[in-house]
Image (cartoon, rainbow over all chains, first blue to last red; front, side):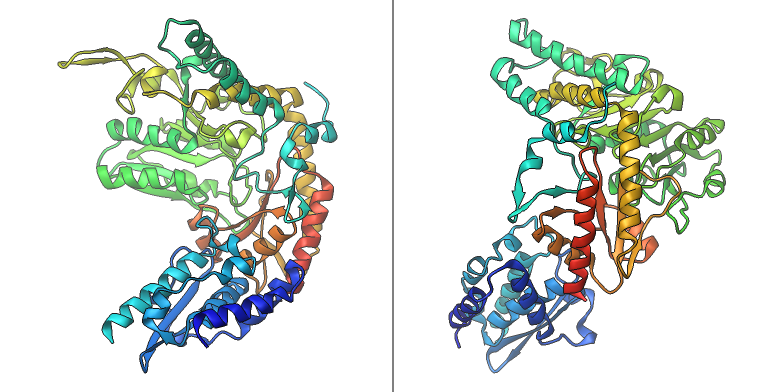
Length: 139
Length: 407
């Protein structure tokens, strides 16, 4: 699936949840499914700045595609990073770098994009795109 | 002094009637900033509609009434904290600027290499970093008053820090992260026995308990308008006249000068030598309304009510399974910080927000305090005079609900 196809599928999934509580329970559930970063990479090198909770994100290039593993010490944040990994992981670096992540707004998580929000969804997106650019340049 | 009528008080704060995420707002982030009563909000509108003009400059009518109003605030602050003179009240941007003025204008001339500054283990970053910057510049050193596991300062440890190298002591009256009320009078007296001046950060005290700078005999006292129901962008540095007169100006510019030629500038007198440039006139003027408002309720009545609410909140939250209070000092004011085993404070904050409950999560700009307790942060509920027992009940059930979701 392309990045946009995954986004559209997530928008459909989220439309199914009526109230915020169900939505957050789903996000928490997604957090449990995140491809976990190896313990050895849970260092300051792979931590994302701008998060009140800790987020670690590790990028890898395989067969011309960028794959991410991640973790967080807060479970809602872990759900958010899991969402981003779901959408962006496993695509060519170029596509990740230029992706328009319209799904965030449409699933009602726009508030998490504000720079004042301490969870740093914005920092996650930026960092993932930066990793993609860097790995893309290497390949 | 009026009577404490919670319904009347709540009616004075328009924002308390709004909804957040479809729920009635429950605002428990008063340590970050308080809401404003309509008396203050109306005064802001009245200022721009009726008065707007620069202060301390024009001969024209509007400038004079603006200046008069600005100076009324200074005198109201003077009375509010019982300062001896109105020129001992410096109008600043806030507590942070007030502390920075002391670091720059007292620290630079009077504190030198290998001298020592004493601060406490429970300081807000704004009462740590200005001193660290001074230490980098001058080669002086910070000494830290230790704290016990309840979040109380160790006074024996404090006494043992003094030496002939001690040049200044700076600590908070009430801890923003823990709610501890420090024994300031005793601590000031100890410092004065060594002839060391004391700065007290009153940002979390001024809205909760009566402050008398002369009874305390404090040398410098700093606080912010926005945490005492007043406008943002205004605060106060109180300093004893004798000390302020010894200090050079803070910044160069308009209002702080007497005469300027290209050869030499002579500085204005107190308080203006510390107030370069156009101040936040609107906020300065409207701070007077906030002081009037607090006085109309009475700080003694406010303290009694808030202490009761704090005790109730502590009792209710204690029933939440796995909840642990951070900061259990014998003397506390208006702040409840806690963690829940196995759950990140941030997650609790997000769920509470969805329930319309505003709390703060994180390190509260006091990272060394969190490091001391070996936690990444806390959930902090901080009270104001308009909070109610029903709101505390909503907080408690909100935390219980968050725990159920997050466990």
